[in-house]
Image 1: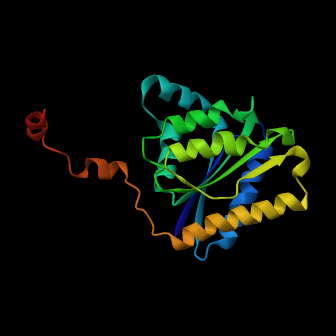
Image 2: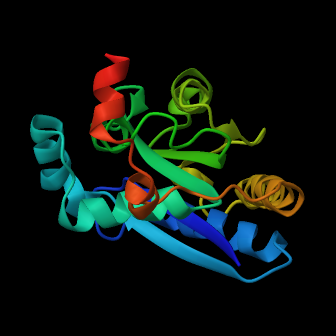
Image 3: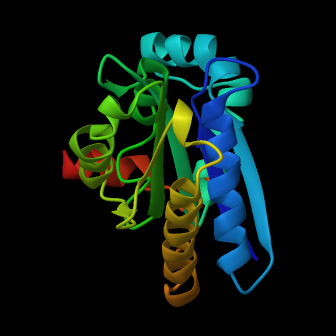
Length: 198
């Protein structure tokens, strides 16, 4: 079973960001040769919890559940709206609160939406560097959709190509076993050893 986490940072309901995320997800699922469990994480309802986490350093409730879904995912589909020529603050905040190295080696398909094609370079100057910094494996094809792109054949072909690339990574890559919270506490270092090492 393949676990795919889909992260959508759209702020409206309905959202073109979520529409693009759903289409990308369908393209990935169509290309994977085994059953796929899809978990969609909408960031809009997590906004308050994300702000609390920045202040306290602790995730709770639905935010903790969302982070756990990312931890056990074999791959991610991530889509953000464009604000001020970059990803949204809500989108960035979610990735700011993840533990370091959580995305190391994880295949990621990146996408973005905006009202105008003028923002299409956001994928290369903002999203791809972010996920490279997080040590994720970003698929070559990123998908940008301006308002006028929906319903166009060009968008559908880009979605199919990007989805196929992520599916190929999932099919050929050995599965990484995500560490759970239980793993973190399964074999603790005795306190005396910690003191000796200080």
